[in-house]
Length: 492
Image (cartoon, rainbow, N blue to C red):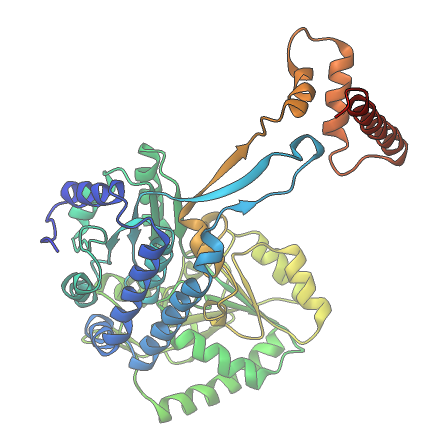
């Protein structure tokens, strides 16, 4: 294996040369690369956990869960890759009856995967999908995840060819230079503000993109919800990585009576969690710590509120009776602060959500099916979870992705493969002389009866009406009789 290139142009050029040589395209090569990638993750699990602790002080069990999801994702790709990669036969009409109608799944070429700092999973999983698609992959870890990025750069070349799958560890300026290069697909996970920059860079070369962005993920808690269960699941979800994940519950909508009961149960849940495991990770940097500290201003704090500037630590905080005009309701929180906005009922909650940008996800706590259905039918979001949060990411068969300002494109399950391939339409026309006589209808000179016949074949693509079927049957029977008479007359 050659030494890894040191600048953006060399990285992309070497990867493109590898793709042109076909080093990643074949099904056998894809499976081998996926198995080696899986081996990298499983054999370096402790190192991945350690580097995420060094970067974020993230709890080891939170990182272990991400690793399990990534491993399951890769194993699912391996189990289904043969089936997904083979050409797919498509339905035919009468006019295509003797033709071959297929969709081929071609690798795209050189793919750039730009990871995010807050979850190793959101870097590891997309890379697996790109490998399964037969692509060369430039892996760009977040500059905030220095230790994790160094691990990928140092260790991954032992498992995968670094020319086909280079790891590009760089600061913001070098990343800007990397985005100027031409890729065949670009996959980015991170905040919407940076997502716009990435999208603009992709537009220069008309590069297709998947953007996994964020947003304000609403939580509606109905009076019918089991509040003890709701409080435990909600506090667990909000505490994950101190709220610094794109799927984190951003704000709660409920009635004032539900709010009062919920706060009591949230206190019990947090007391239980902290007594058993007091570990909480800090805010990632000074900028975000000060931003979150400013968001606390003017809030009615019901739980938490303690901050430690020396450690960039903010206690998980729940604020009640929050005004929709407060600054915390105008930006993604992305931290351990959960505002509760009182509303009168579920219909007002739906109106509140629909007046804002479409979120990445939505959490609905309700036991009444009619209320759950009302949200599902009258709102738009990347995903919805009923009576829980975050768990959609661990459910293998569900796609993950946003809509509107929360992103575009998706992965997981077959979407991980489909995202990183080009579905090429292939039509194999028959050269049968009898069929060619039919196709002469399309040739000049154009006369009405020809177009009438063409219209018939296109219009009745799902089957021929009974009346026409009788005439076709008589015609075919006549052809058979004519052939038999011809053969007998010539003594054949």
